[in-house]
Amino acid sequence: MTAIAQFAYINPLHRLKHWDAKKRRRVDCWQAREQKCYYCEAGLSQIHDYTYGVYIERGNAEIQYLSTTLTTHTLFQRTFSNLFDKNQNPCDLLFAFERTKITSLKGARVNGYNIGILDGEEMFVPEVMRPSPLTPHQNKVRDFKWIVPEEIVINLIDDDGKPFNLIDLFLKIKDIAPRVSEKKAKTYAIRLLENGVIDVRKAKEYREEING
Image 1 (tube, rainbow, N blue to C red):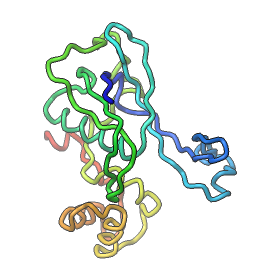
Image 2: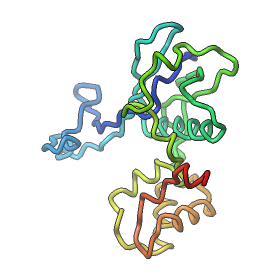
Image 3: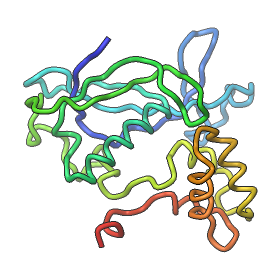
């Protein structure tokens, strides 16, 4: 099934969640609020939740919210980054959204959203009616692109600033993302190492550096 929507902003709200089997729904992780979390103590895995704002009909500037997983979020951000490379604003375009199975970097088939650009279609809401690009809700990928995929970086956060050799980091990246080729995994490992220490900030390349 396909739905059509326009992004109101493309820097999503990031929250940590847990799946509560008894309530059969996602619940907040209190650790993210620097509070004691019962779910973490119970050993429930954290879930990265990314909420986007979208418009769903022409002329209606009321923002609806779309909750996505890390895998879908990564796919969206890759699409946005490619559009900015072509000097296109993703918020000026309509997209077809399909709820389907998508492949994570681990190679698992998971539920998520695939999107495709609808060329030549008039946008639902013009720029003047959308959130200012200077607000926190607007797009950060306008300023940088991920050289190392965000799915990998999320899993390396705990190792940031720790000493690593190239081989061990290469193997860790392959363990995180088996679908990544050995050549790319080696390239990512080389980029993230600075004097034998992991620096996850190097996963990004800022556009002023690209264009400069």
